[in-house]
Length: 388
Image 1: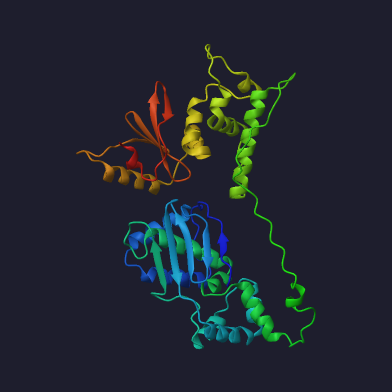
Image 2 (image 1 turned 135 degrees about the vertical axis):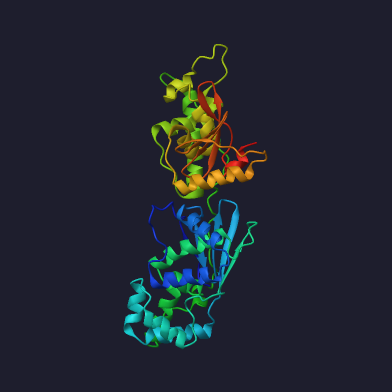
């Protein structure tokens, strides 16, 4: 069976970026759009796709899949070709020397697709060939999440037409091997039969590394110039970061300030032991951390680096995103008169409550403490959910 291919999540795109610049990518989008009965959902799907609100995409025979908004499973199913249809398609590829060269150059020749259709091999989907599924409550066909997935997949198709062939049932490696077998001369088998080579058995594979091993603090002895408390905190932090690296494959790059806040947020009790005088602890001095970062620490605990960024920096979101937020606030208001916030850049102020829009597409609540705004809770995609 052909292995699935995984693609990293698309980041938010700059203004003016188009979907589907290749002719086969445009045919893919047209098949999806012609199936839809709700242009509003398509418009929302385009916005979701460009704002990077889908997770990594998995392409496998007969389906594409992703996770939307970290909670909805989105799948679009595509009918796979039969073995007989694949044989006819391989005949068309082998009939012209330039076809395989074009595919390897990430191009889909018009005449190859036309010849395949003449041989009853539909490569490009038509109306009704795409079957979207989503766990969200939207009844649209497709919903905005499935539409966003199809729009983002058009970028994958632009870059590599083998993605389309994989959806139809076979990936690049399978096709290349099948074409090589057609051209390769028949050879007598050589070497040792596998039954003899492995007559004594195959040694078992080693166990996978234990990623979730419990952290055991090192036994540290006090000594001249050695801050045992600070070293214990840094060792626990390094162990946690190593575990995250094993799980996710990479770690975000942090500035010195962000890493200080992270240490305080994750290891605050160890860095700030209780004292009668409330004086700065030796552990804090030893690691160069500062007291007085309460709001920053709270922001990190609610949203990590994104939460800290929205606390410390203002930015100007696209106008249509602010208009959408205002509409959500009005629709979620239960009183007689909907709120009219004071808007400055990415900040909506409603009396003692301020909502700040982050670059990751979520709204963070803030409450006033004296002359400062403090983080007041975890973020939400819908700002009206923070009005309570």
